[in-house]
View 1: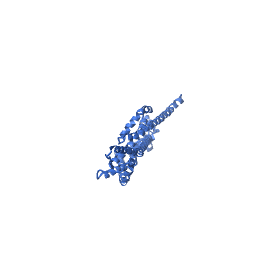
View 2: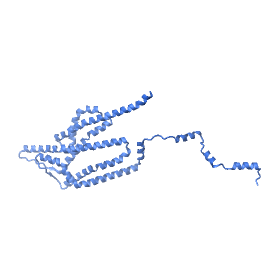
View 3: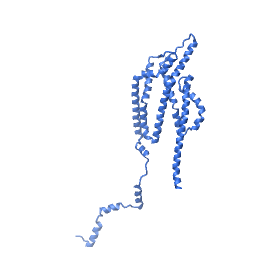
View 4: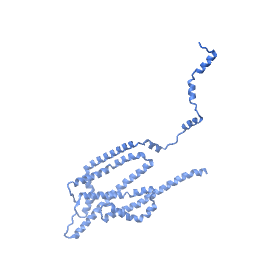
Length: 326
């Protein structure tokens, strides 16, 4: 039996009784300080708006090791495409050489010489064909190689940068192809005819001395490939000037002031980019170069006009709220 009186015993049992679980939960949710309640309200508030382009870039963000693995995969695919294209080109390389040398053959015939090519070594044919197979492999595999490069670079670019890169790449390819087509159909045959006609004229002046052209297979292939490559690079002039104009480095007024020196510069570039030393071939390339420079001025003028229009639209949008508030 307890020694406490009945009323004291009730008070002690009341003090020792545990609190209900509901009261503990309610007491635990009460903030210790009023500022803590405000902090919770601020954390549960609306989140700041996120740029969707930036969010997409964050999703594709990779570590350095992941970038290296991705680069290795893209390079492997590009090398496989090049090797397959080169091996396939070996089968057609003889036909490729025949098509490539047609302008020189026609120039020789028109100049009155037989279209004979010679070799100076046992392995010359093999190395010339191998060189042409490598070039054909690069040309055939270039779309896939550029695609692999694009897949590696594109995830880190904004939408505007992707559009600009696509326009520049497409324009570069079109201008280079246009330059090689111009060199093949317009430049190579007249150049071969002009140089062989000089030999024919010297043969007539020499009397009993006979000058016989001995065109080597390797030299003819190098002449044609260098001429086509030089024309392709020369036709990149509008792309280069347009990029400089878009960056604000050159202006239409500055290009127009430089126009009087452009013809001289075009002649110098024609001499540098063509492998032959005769002035006829140089002038054949200098004329289109000067025309491309004039086209470049028009392109830069269009870019400047579009930029000014966009700046005016942005200025009008900026001034509209100020006009409404006043």
